[in-house]
Amino acid sequence: MTVKNSLLILLIIFSCAMADLSAADAVSVPGGASINSVLASVNGEPVTLLDVVLETAAFERELAVMYTGERLNREIEKLRRTALEDIITRRLICKEYEEDPFQVPDQMIENMIDEHAKMFGGLTRKELELQLKQRNMSLADLRKKMRERIIVNVILIRNCDKQVVVTPKDVYSEYQKNIERWTHPAKVEFQMIQLNKENPRSGIAAAATAEKLSSVLSSGAGEELFSKLMDEYSDGPRNGFITSIEVPKLRPEFQVALKDKKSGDVIGPVDTAEAIFFVRIFRLQLSTPIPFEKIAPELEEQLRRDAIRKKREEYGKRLRAKALIQYYI
Image (cartoon, rainbow, N blue to C red; front, side, top):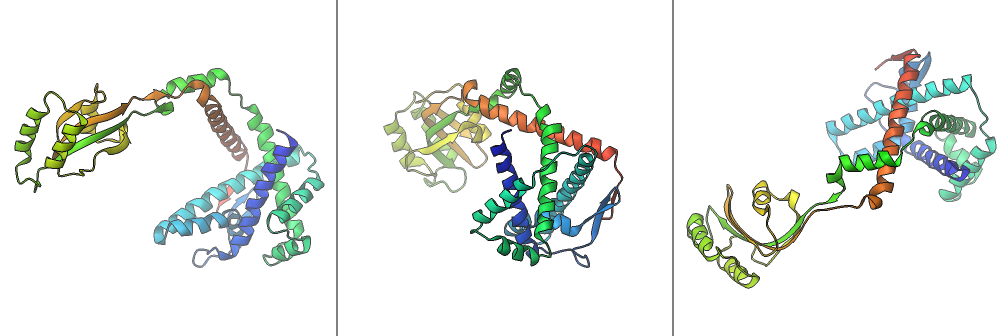
């Protein structure tokens, strides 16, 4: 990973941290709880509700737009529990750092703070310090928090991410195993005659009309004839064509009827619970696999992300196995 990419990643992390700080004021806590309530301890070091809220506040505001009531409470609780586990893992990673420390350049943190201040309206250091002070934090506290995040990120990259190797063989094997996922589904555009079983427009029973149409359409029909019959008999839309739709999204009855058919074919009668249908296929586009060469970069990146996530989870479990973790919730 290049220095430029590392700085970009860390700047994004920092931006998220600052967003959490600015949003934390608006976040509620459970009845009777204090923002300083201890939720867990890691080798005797407490993790408070404030620690968690600083991680989740910005996301909680998004949840408040999406949910209300008990559903909102459940989603916030789930988010906070995930954040709590992440904090515990980071604390354990920092413990690993103490056993094998490396230098974190102070200038890197200072540069990131300056860049962030520019992104958010060109804040001066004094303005930034004022914002932090309003939230009972200092610039030194922020530097410490950022230093911890840098340490965690570097150790995860070193102990997990760099261990991941995705070969061309892995990518092609995944492509072959899930070929249907990398396929453009078949699409169909058609005209349709719909004969409702209840209250048909013609006043004639759907079965009787279907028998008549079966005779007329037995040898097929062009667009003009089918359109005329549709105008005369259909209880459904009579405005020409059904918009192109993916075949897998059709009702099962239609998927079965379309099997082995081609453009221009007439299908029917298709009998369903509410109506009888006749369909003329105007255009049928068969499913087409996406070429491996086109999808390979995306697939490789997906495999790499999945492998890194798994490595990080395994690493976290190994750290937890050696730690004393207590929960108070």
